[in-house]
Length: 167
Image: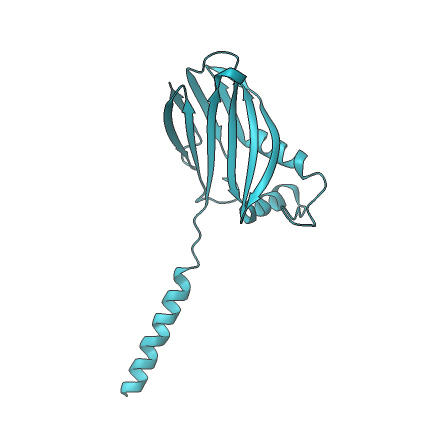
């Protein structure tokens, strides 16, 4: 009887522990830095490759094999389009285009680089960010900014897809 209770306890403990690792945290990080001398905002995104791969398969019905030797030849175009569709920015109240520059990988994270023209001193940034929200309901997009020496952050979720920061 004692061995049966011990076995049941260990079985339930093992089952509980294997389930603990099943939940995944869905987050992407964006950094925006205003560089007055270049009259641009430099934007960097950090997104888990597997999350982006799943979103691309769902949206484009095609496998991209991001950051592998089998990567789709036209991935640059798809990445530029995807982020332009899912991130809208207004600088000082005026819409601003996002220009995709390139990418690299850090472990299982895809790091993408962008620029946004900013001819005048940045006083405000309005942003709508829906990156991965149509694929993962729990997705969170954290945006950190450094503008005119002021560091501010904003969190986007399915419940809050847009916001404004004043400097």
